[in-house]
Image (cartoon, rainbow, N blue to C red; front, side, top):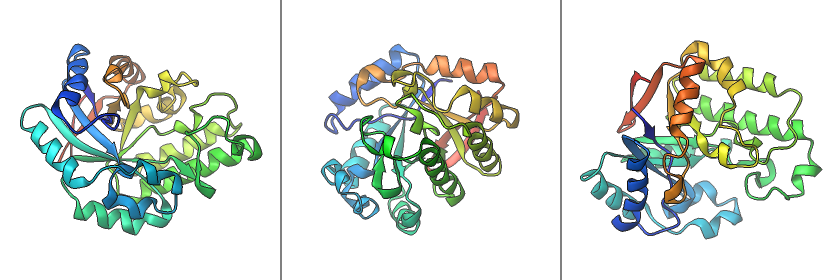
Length: 269
């Protein structure tokens, strides 16, 4: 069963006509189960998680009541899961936990890291001077340290685009395999599911998240997977999902995670 659990409607309204553009593309690509996973930074209720990052203020354009009403309406008509992509900040674990307990209508929560130390939003601008001011090993180590803490926090159901820090291509640290092996051990000893995110094939790095090298390390442990195209526009819904399934099967993965009210159901891939 092909699933796409990573999709954002943020470039349009919470209206059925806009959703249908995504849904029709999913049908075209044989996606059987869809999940909408709006960014947490969109919602005023989650503003305390992001208030230390001024750049995110203009991204806050909605509220969770509106999101819940709209997605619950869609769920009655379509095979849809209601998700959330929440940024992880180690210093905000308490606030994240409390807000996810208060707003508990999600089927699943994706955990992701988009900001590292000093508020460096590494995926915003490839020409950000911090890419050259900081050592590449330091940037990747900082990123994977946050990912490790995210997994150990037990706040999330899925780790999203695990090595997205590589998105601009170019330099990679010499110790990348060591970082991969360390994170693989953390995942194996957790209950988290791993997302194969096909957006990396649309970025300068031209590689799935996480990389085949990382997946080869993890494959023998049969960690359950989810899949997402990370679409922000209808044409990207389901893009390369079949390709990602084929890769996972070739590497020996056998389990797929689907979710209902944050309960994980593991089925055959």
